[in-house]
Amino acid sequence: MLLGWDQEIERRQAVVALEKARRMPDVTVAAGVRRLQEVDDTALVAGFSVPLPVFDRNQGARAAARSDLHKARHERHAAVARLGRQ
Image (cartoon, rainbow, N blue to C red; front, side, top):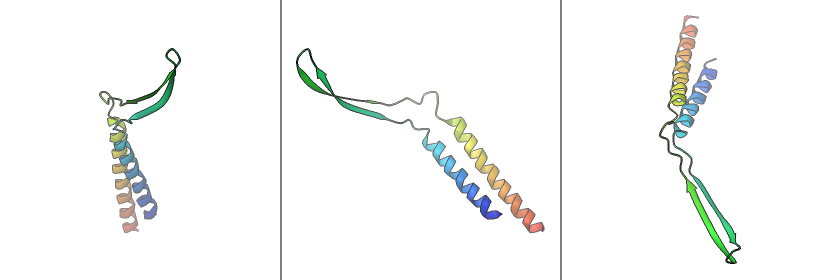
């Protein structure tokens, strides 16, 4: 019974870590070759994009994940108390 709670707490800790990692935006890098027919030439093109996390820093999902972890810890503690009474 307690092993199940330990595994659930580990899972929820992983979710907290994942949501924390998602607050940083993904950088996208692109590269390719472009044929310029007007001048009969070939060019290398490259680019990257970085979304600015001005409005969404994943705060809601991070708070929910921390709350779920806190709840799981309390439920495990309650299970330990029930086992102690029995």
